[in-house]
Image (tube, rainbow, N blue to C red; front, side, top):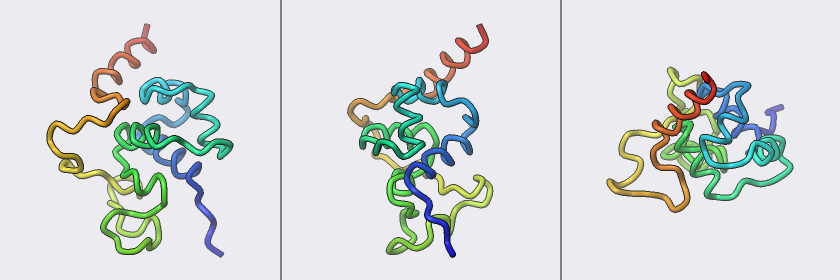
Amino acid sequence: MIPDITIADRLRIAREKSGYDGKQAEFAELIGIGATTLIRYEKGHTRPKRIALKAWSLATGVPIEWLEFGVVPGEGNGGPAMAGAASGSGGLPQLDSNQQPAGYRPEGVVVDLASKKRRVSEKRAA
């Protein structure tokens, strides 16, 4: 029997594999949502809004298609979610460097995640 991996499971897996295991509040701040909202998404109580999925994808480096539907882009018509995933990434598919066109800025998504990540880390260290 193959276990059903829900969107909530995929969100949690992506967050944990990207280095935010046990750091829900920090990750929520990074992507611009409330910690309670993040918990509701990861428990499957609320379906994430598309803008939250985009931010989650950008912050974790995992394609939005995998987060939302469990499919790896370019893997055909929805084969197993983990098929073809990069082995060095903990089993998660990764965005390539050309995922978005130059100058693309998704509306409402934090664009400079690196500096926001530094600010979150500095707050935690203080």
